[in-house]
Length: 126
Ligand SMILES: [Cu+2]
Image 1 (spheres, protein in one colour):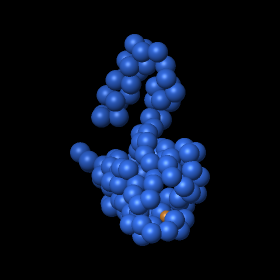
Image 2: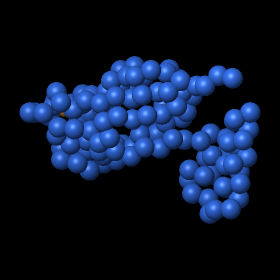
Image 3: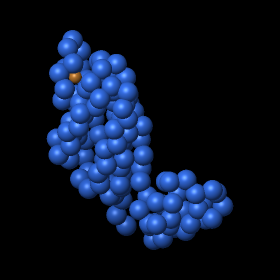
Image 4: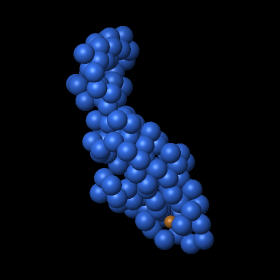
């Protein structure tokens, strides 16, 4: 039911606004939760990412100062982030819970502080 309402809402949006890439995808029935972030010594911003279970997620992370990595073991993700190059990381948040991520490319002092967590909020069942 919620899905149907959401779909109606998205269709209404798609009808009333110029179609951006995201709106076009939403209208096609596969909304993507897009989150932009950065990596720099010694942090990820944001370092807490919250999504909903079942969502298609696209993280776009840009390394600001040098090469870093993004490793989210629970979802078998490990990407190299070259300096200045936004990297898109897509997955479906199928598992609910809190999952740590960290920098997987040794970047000197501060490397081990480059940590964060993905929170996947469980689907509400009626
Ligand atoms: Cu690092």
